[in-house]
Image (cartoon, rainbow, N blue to C red; front, side):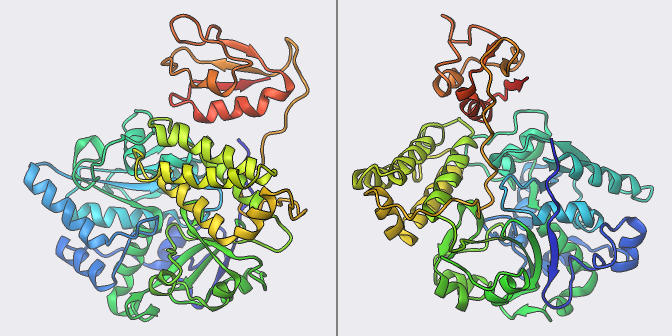
Length: 491
């Protein structure tokens, strides 16, 4: 797998999480201690008090209060009479999100020490991290190897890079050696997570913020940001920049720092499960909970994606919807069937399918909501609904055949579709079935029916299929959607 081009780093004000990276690209153990100093040891009640005093919340999506999560783990561990575990979510399956990977690549010790601080205070049995890129895995393993003797062991697990891998039950199941897919049941990690034990599960930036706060103390931490939301926040901007800024910084200042002087047709806040705000709002809003709440938006995973004037917002939405459908865990109808149905209806509307096609999109969005086994269907449906509301005129014009004529330039950072290879011969590309993994779901035959045929037992009737040139893209979708990860391409 090729490693993407590294994003540029930028800072508004004084850096905390990105401190020291103006003079080096990565802080090893010595450089880390030189910049940040040693990590203090805190008792459990001190860690909880620190998290409460700085109002530390999860920086990966829902923004759940970290202190409440700590208390939940303590209560569950005491009630069940077992030691808890600590898990770092080091995955970022969304192409528009960059910040957590950069922390693990550039300042891994700061991340790991936040988790170790919590683990020591909790008396945790295990500390583990799940990652989804080989370069990130290498960086984390090097940091673990640099830890001084006697440091609590940290387990590092490499997992498939899929959007749903970062869901709590999917990541913990992957660390346990199971399929990295959501469990499909609503059980909080604080109650039952890694190995069935109460688990403190948080994303990379959250543990990094705790690591910084433990060093500088609550009072200094609160010097930056807002009184009711102190500190800094990491942002992934336009799929090309990682910015650290004080909470409450105007969005226009962050965009300007990245060389974006015009918010264009609007800005997607919070990534592919996020919301669009219009250009006027983008010029006025600040980056904090209260300000964004006026637009029904949250920072979530910290992705900020402007939609420039030169791209087609309808085409951008269709690309994201297709990609999100391909990222389905295929474990429930709303995800396996509903999301592809939404993407197909969107595509029809974008290509002049009429106003009925737009109505079909809205109907399918409603049909998906609150029915999924995890948050992926709801998040995708909300993204599509936000796009329809924000770009209603553009969607209507496309539906009735008056498209804008602009290209879709990929401003929302969706990976390009694979280019079909001109081959349909024995020596051309092939779709391979791994019999050790296949469980006979038959979804591959639904996605590429002109290639894959099922035998009487419901399994593919061959381990190798030659791919016609016009079937390669569908084969890639089948690979992404296979719940057992039993398919691959070979040339």
